[in-house]
Structures are given as structure tokens and as C-alpha cells.
Length: 317
Ligand SMILES: [Zn+2]
Image (cartoon, rainbow, N blue to C red):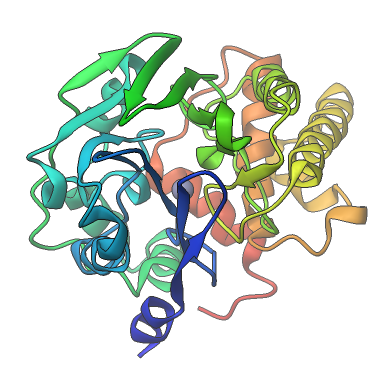
């Protein structure tokens, strides 16, 4: 079963300065990373995972560290479920998110995923294909107990941890977690290593500015929201993709192409190797909304329908 294979693929990676990573090496839709910053006698967990089985295995994977530095604080980097649906397994700790992320979390609950995957439509079949390995049943959504705006500094057992909300970009609120002494940044989904960024919210400019902010922090270790631990080169690659797609989609908007036509027409060029290339359909739509505020906001099934449509030639449903 695919889910067992991908669950087994996850691993604990020790980084510098008390920083750790639970890396879901396979990456892909919903296969997010979690981080741990361990100080003296206390730890901060960066994100829980998409379902309870994965989150439980991640917590077990960190047990050797958390036995001497228990988790006292959890940060949810943003409102997508693959970064917080596992919260009920850490509900006794303080859970922190930006104010904008909390609002996002109230919008999409685990039952919405089941509903998205149910219908016998292109979007339903596509959602089933990409989320097949996750179990959204029995999840009791636990929301953050503390919110902040823009920036919050925490002392985790003597280690300074800075939370910075760089959104709206990927979603309405996007928190990065900076550990200055470890020269490490957990970027949440501001960076996808080896996969296509998906601009659910935008604006693109804000995401580009977020990349510049990360690059300006002087960190050497970049922990992406998805994919293996990486370097500043991945931040620059994300920035380049966003600028390229914005430019290409804008040019097609100017000559009257529909978002669907534009997504099919844009050559991926040097970005051809990125996984989940179908996210281009969402990204083009977001550019079009920036250029035309009257364009209707698409709901979940419509967004997944766009991607199913673009992925169609390569995926048999
Ligand atoms: Zn994610």
C-alpha cells in the first residue's frame, strides 16, 4: 500500500544547533515536513502532519530528543491541513499561529478533504489520487491557542526562536521560523524543495519579498515545507519560478487568453523537472485575479478541477 511505503520513508534528520527535521523524503501532495528546535529542557515543534498516523510516528521519531527537552510550544506555519491536522496529539502544549493562519484554519476542516475526494468528477478523482494515502477520519481539529501578528520572539529553553508572518503569499498567513544561533530557517510552504510552489492566495510580489527576507537572514540551513533539507539556492529557485510564472501569465492575460489556455500554453522551460507541475493551473489563476479583481475566486473543487484538467494528458483517471 502506497501510504505504508511513504510513511516508512520518513526520517529524523539532525541539523545544527539543536535543530531537527522530520523529513518526509518522498515529498509530494500533503507530504510535509515537521521541525523541532530543542533548547535546555524544552522544545518547539514546527508543524504537525496531515493525519494522526503520520503525526504519531513523527512524535515517536523525535522521542529521543523530547525525552530530555519536552515539547512546550507548537507552531503551525500556515492553515493548510498538512501542517496542522495532527494538532490533537499535542493539544496539551501551547499552539501558536499567526492571526491570519488561524482564520484560514477555521475555513478548511478534515471533513472538507473527505468531501473533496468523494465525487466521481475529474477534481474528485484527482484529489483521491493525490491524497489516497492519508486518513482524514477520526481527526478532531485542534486550533491554535495563541496568535500573533507579523512577528513573535520566543525563548525555548534558552534558544531564541523568531516567528515571522511573511504572508499573505502561499496562503493568507505564512509563518517562517528563524533560529538565528543555528543559522537555520524553517520556511513552511514558502519553499518547496524540488516541487512546484502553489500560490493559493498571493500576491506574488509578497512571496518574492518573503524569499528576499529569508535570503537576507544569513541562514545556511533551509528547511522547506516539503522536500529534503536544502540551501539558499532553493529559495532563489522558488523566487525565479514565481517571477517567471507571473511574467508569462501576465503576457497571456494581455492578449486575451483564458487562464486555462494560458496554463496550457506556458512552457515550463528550466522548471520542467519540478514535481506537481499541474499547480501551474492554480498559479495562473492567481495571477489573473491580481490583474482582474473582478475574476471569481475559485473554491476547492474548482481549483483541483483546474489542476486535474492540466494534468490530464499525463495522468489516467
Ligand atoms: Zn504543505
